[in-house]
Length: 269
Image: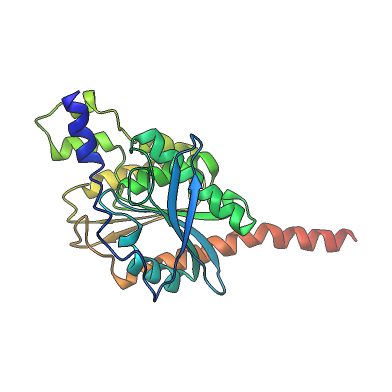
């Protein structure tokens, strides 16, 4: 029992609700309440763009909540020309419940479905972005419900490997319940993948990120290495440039089949 409590505190170090800016006037997010499949009540921010090129669900890291994301949401919205939805896992921020792997994945699935319904599109039209443990949620979401693209930042192949790196003297691979086996799940995702990792990441070594990247079955993928960056460092401007170019290629490729079908219909008529 004690081991389980220690595991939860290490895997899900939920920050205080008093931290962060819950009413950033310069961003003006819309508060959203929605429910996971098990009826857990969840909270998120919907940040619409006046003329969006894409739709993005963002899965944050484990010591954050939505009130910490205002600056990042502004940066993503501006650079990606995107309508965004960032949400809190159960037990984080204003979301109800207690976090655990299956529940947090349910939360990610529900967030993607909410944005799809809001925008009148399929879940496969939503780009899913995940950072650190949020990458574990994002992989599970994309593998189950599809995605326009999957974007991973400083993400492990398996949480047990990341934990073993941090606590090599403990039998974490045997006792951990929260395993987030993205190495297995990503084999069920065949869409575009953009993955970045810092070379100085001492929480999730870059080798674990490359292992996950190599396991992805898609050929439409790119690995962006951030030299000298640690796990919690902000991403540099050239990251957003590279990501935007990648997503533009995704959009162009998505339009090609439709364009060919239009030409074929014209030839037949």
